[in-house]
Image 1 (spheres, rainbow, N blue to C red):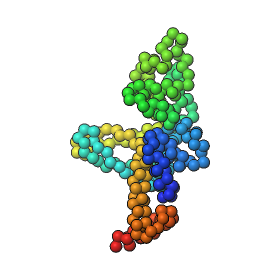
Image 2: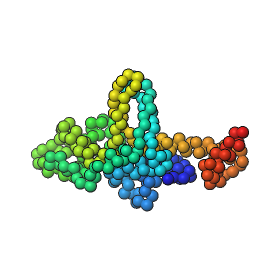
Image 3: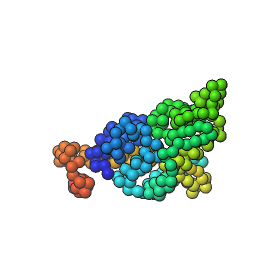
Image 4: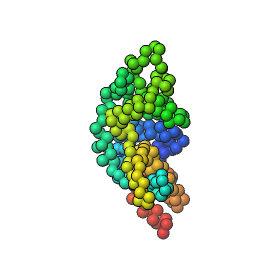
Length: 243
């Protein structure tokens, strides 16, 4: 669990970073003893599991959020439990290569996401991702299309590779099944646990800073003194300030 000073430092360090880098900051906070240079090579499911456990320690297992219906635009609340998501994601096999035809692949990592982050075309991004994960391509002779040629990858192949990767690493992407009570539309929504936790950290960081401002203004205390107080004591002092 992160103390308030650690949370503030994490938020400040990641405020201007790309979401992929923010996720690695969260992973580093979850595993502070792991060499930071190796975190980018964790499979995405392993990364997401560790971030989910960090979130559960800081904010609890319940996940509550809001989404907009893609058909009518109404906002609806969703609720799920991290323990159920983590249990469902424990059935994968992240250690074995994924073989599709004569090609073998490893699982995507944060480093792979960073490499394709600037690719605007989703189809091309998917091709680049599987290229980075390609371990071998025994079916390609010197006269065949290069694996770096988009023509070397059919839509069917990409779909099969994606399906096999999802089976091997279920927590790499978490899909929630939702239904709009207003128009009845049903769809799947991606739950990005790293982005979700970051929004919670940002909201709490701003609330802590507001508390520091009020108490510093009222009592002249330094930030470190205020952060050294328990949350209960800060709340009581704030009640007296408001009174």
